[in-house]
Length: 75
Image 1: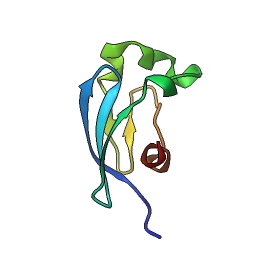
Image 2: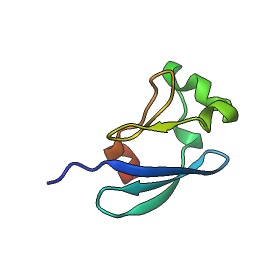
Image 3: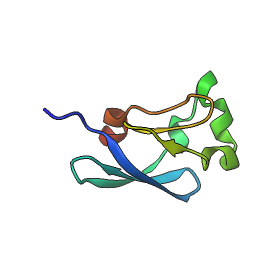
Image 4: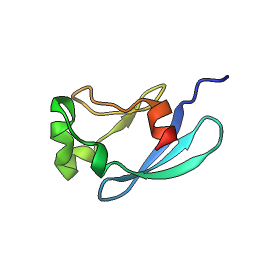
């Protein structure tokens, strides 16, 4: 089975991001219910949340917070 990766991500609104996965699937995911725990605390600031970047596997923020691509694919 091929490893699922996020190959593109685009901010939509609120805590919603449109993800394109390596198998071609596109999903809009609302991450508002997923932002808990110390590393994710800064993401509660919407301006900070919007400043994610794409690494070779998924999206990440400056503080090192990220979501596993397999997890994003399942939700």
